[in-house]
Image 1 (tube, helix red, strand yellow):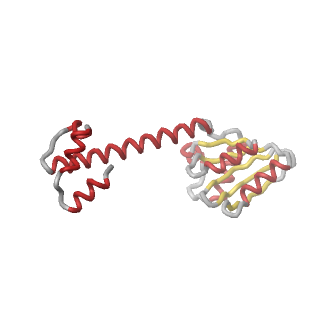
Image 2: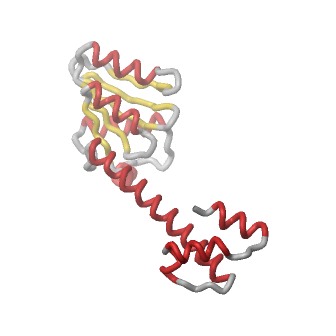
Image 3: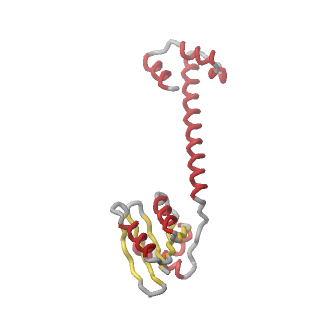
Amino acid sequence: MWIIGVDYHPSVQQIAFVNTDTGECGERRLSHSDGEAEKFYRELKAAGCKVRVGMEATGHARWFERLLAELGLELWIGDPAQIKAKRVRKQKTDRQDAALLLQLLLEDRFPRVWVPSAENRDLRQLLWHRHRLVQMRTRIMNQLQAVAMNEGVRRKTALWSKLGRAQLESLPLAPWAARRRHDLP
């Protein structure tokens, strides 16, 4: 079995690895942009190796998580605060971080966290998108209310009725205020 500690960055990853069957061990720096990292993991899969990868929870790694899932390789995500607490030295480098992750995996002390499924993550994206749309609509409505109130029209929620919208559209405004009213749907 290959056990790999990954210090992940958006453009590269530093890995420390050991093959528990052969005793082979080492470290590498894999680039993402030229496909070196993807090629490395695909070669392990093609060789029929069983692989466990451990890395700290981080953003911008969704593609990497999908790649490992597609290849059927085991991915463990660790709690960064607990991993940091297990670091002995204050000095920190990518090589040391990868080696620490590997050591924690080998000693069965890796602080694994729960990770939602791909379907759950996609649903969360939909909810986040909806939330942002509602925020945008609220900001626009508040701005239009402010335009109306500056012109002496205070209709509260009635401003959103057909009559209220017609009154808002008929208000004589200065050129830039009129442009703002026009640009806000």
